[in-house]
Image 1 (cartoon, rainbow, N blue to C red):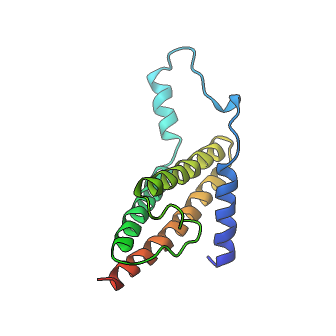
Image 2 (cartoon, rainbow, N blue to C red; image 1 turned 30 degrees about the horizontal axis):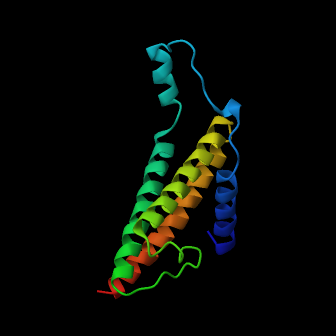
Length: 145
């Protein structure tokens, strides 16, 4: 994936995460749902989607950890968008948690609106960007040893 594709995917993720929630997005269950219906709902979502959620959250957590480690060893934050929160562990964690939740919520909305390939594509692109950041952070940590 080239830089232009990665940038387009990132813009898509940020835009989708900023979409407002509407009342019809809320699921209200008035009566108990039979056990068979609950099982069927959980089966309808592929393990791939859940795995992408977990890997994205893990990569974001590693980004916080590795950035904090590098900063403590004398490195500086290279991303100008993160320089304002890089000095604060809680600020970084809050920002990364917000980005992670926003991305997952956007993908879930796409999935529920029958844009299943779009949801998977957003998560694959997000994981790809996060993996690139994680690899760069790991490289920086190796150089600082």
